[in-house]
Amino acid sequence: MKGNMTLEQFLEEWNNDSDRLLVHTSGSTGAPKPMWVKKRRMLNSARITCDFLGLHGGDTALLCMSLDYIAGKMMAVRSVERGLKLTEIEPCGHPMASFVSRPDTFPDGGFDLVAMVPMQVYNSLQVAEEAELLRKTRHLIIGGGAIDDGLERRLQTFPHAVWSTYGMTETLSHIALRRINGADASPYYVPFESVSVSLNADGCLVINAPLVCAEPLTTNDIAEIAPDGRGFRILGRKDNVICSGGIKIQAEEVERLLRPHLPVPFVISKKKNPKFGEIVVLVTQSNDTAEVRLICEKVLPKFWQPREYISMERIPMTETGKFKRNFL
Image 1: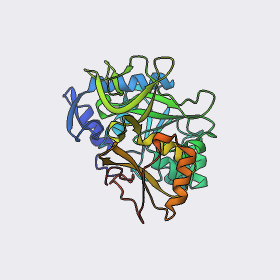
Image 2: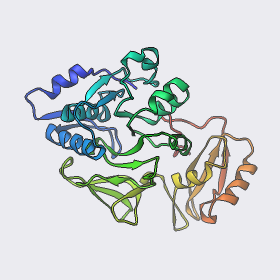
Image 3: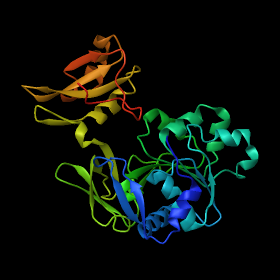
Image 4: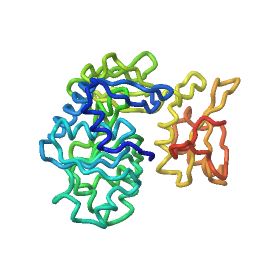
């Protein structure tokens, strides 16, 4: 996580005469690009989140993400909007480690609000003392990447609220939260009160959030609307739809079904095919593709089953540490 901007620099920029702030998109809806954002809209976003979570002036918050990106900037703006006591630490993979070595800097009873990426949460759970401090957080919000099933299961035992966030730079961080643990846990994200969602003809999520985003925003995320008509679930990316013999197959959904049964790293990819248009291909680091095939035949619906199995010593990775999907 690269991060050069300090909180002091950010606040200087926040308090200058301009009514706008420069942010850079993460590339969720296209190539990364600079974007000027109205500070008023950032305050709206902060207010909506703080109201939803019931945060009050004097509550404590931890900034452990880079201020170069929207997630870090919005933690600072929430603190300004609500009068939170903000503790800033250098963005790193083990945010709780500094409090283990200096317990006097950790607030009594834990932080009221902490935002982390999944890797930071995962790392913190590997060290008992760090996990113990993280468990004291009143609201832990996790964004910037998918939370895998294994991590989600471990978070079920947290005594306070743990949330998965949905949003992007264009919506000034999240516009919906999904409760991971407790009685209100759900597979569906719940949009904030001022936000509504719908699907376009391709099944992609369209976000209408007038307080934070001037125009409705069409994402590249294939989604399913909840039975109540308000919540939604993300099935995967539009780029990861495999059109095979007239059937649309979402690569991430295939992986979700297989993950509990395949212990060795794998990824679902696709290849062009003269008969079917495209076929499902499973790339695995296992040498035993026959065994993998048997598991797929047992677990997957017939039309989702891979038509080709490829064994590789190491599946190529992206810069952000995810398996590359469309490299064949």
